[in-house]
Length: 249
Image (cartoon, rainbow, N blue to C red):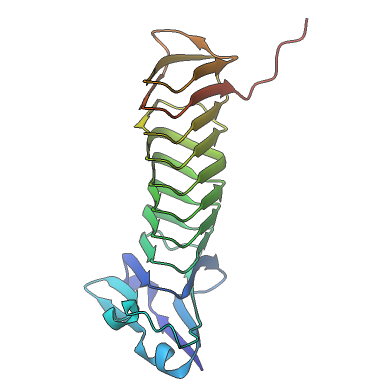
């Protein structure tokens, strides 16, 4: 069964999409209004909520979708198409299904998952948050003033991105962050997961602290007046390197 609905972009300031096991995709496209496209089994497609409430477009699987049905094959694809000139907030969450986001340009962007993987490209927002428990996060081309990355045991990899202020939190998951523009502040904490950061700078005020994990910098001089990088860890390794080429002799 297919289900297609269109919502006036002028009436919506926030998009809130929450799925349990369905594949969720939120993409910017050449459309005039927000479109919700759903494909899957009849009962599941009909159960999906899609309605505007006080300026918020809510797309949500019902609570009963959390109940496991081990003998039933379930499949549903939810695609939300967003106009290029829409600048609202986005809250996209999934429990076990994959979450994909592309081209979003809004105020606050939040992508969250429990065990599903997150794939994101070309995101721009005043604030961008991505979090996972066990799922993997892979993103590139993120541009934001404030970036928040959180994981329990899932890996996080963010490439070719820009952020002024960065907050990192990990328990056992590894975080790899590659910035292509100078930052103002990076801070965070980890337990056993490694944190690797690459920056286009040769100076930073580095405050690495770890009980047993290795602490290493490469190509970055530690200078008090430089932008701070403050991260604590228990046993995870903390690594900071420059992406700038070495000067020629």
